[in-house]
Length: 212
Image (cartoon, rainbow, N blue to C red; front, side, top):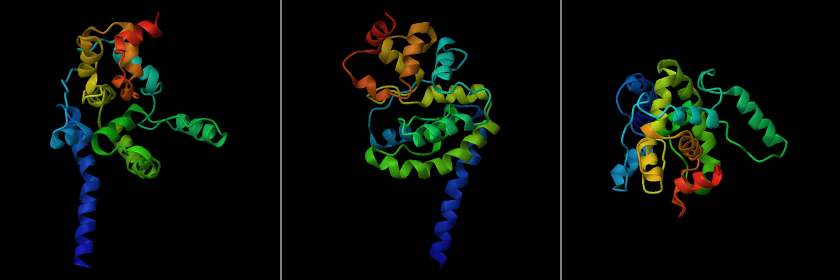
């Protein structure tokens, strides 16, 4: 009985830790769980933090437009987009994501991305933790800070590149501070599809194709 109580106490503490830590992320350079895991296991991992004010303004605009159009209006969860995605699924249409930028920050900072076929089983469980955590993040962190964190922790390359600065250096060979509108739009389109960065074409070549 004592072991069960101890395990429950450990579980409770683990669940509360993100809520305690989040307010302290108003400053500093937080890392994602995947970044920490790669560092611990010795896998390649590179991330150079870049402040939102230093980034090319085209990048945050492009990311919000492509991933979370209601980012400035919702409180962590876009229930309208969620209802539309559920309705599409019921109508037999292809399943599309409805995660907000804030939800992705919650997932990247504190939760997990299930590998392979396991995602069908584990992702719904993760969502149970992700929803209230996203609402909490939106409550205690400014929108600009949430976006800044997201742009610095998302996986952006095939060899452990994380964040806008590493992604821009890999894709275009220069800082995210000097991204052109075309480059920013191209990079933004990769935030949810970073696996495409492993293809032989560099993103600069893809940009020439897409925007020719």
